[in-house]
Length: 59
Image 1 (spheres, rainbow, N blue to C red):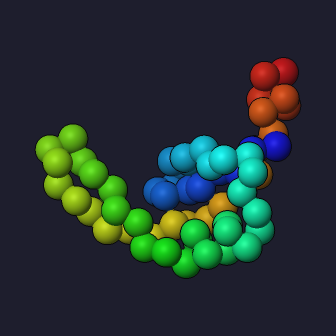
Image 2 (tube, one colour):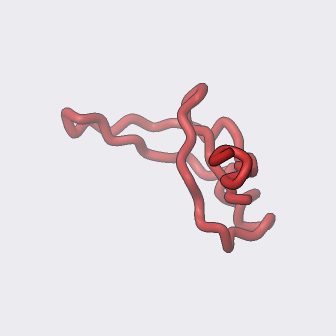
Image 3 (cartoon, rainbow, N blue to C red):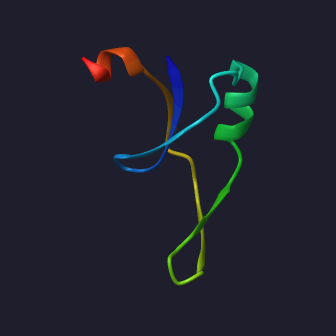
């Protein structure tokens, strides 16, 4: 299982498998910066952190 961070509805970013619950909690409280293709910086909030089952997705 790999932790995934949701930064926009339906947009997930993989996180290191070694991420601890304390680190995930701290990360979820931290504002993030998103960089657009035009180089513009947008500030956002992490919507959630979930576990993704890689084996199940592969079928």
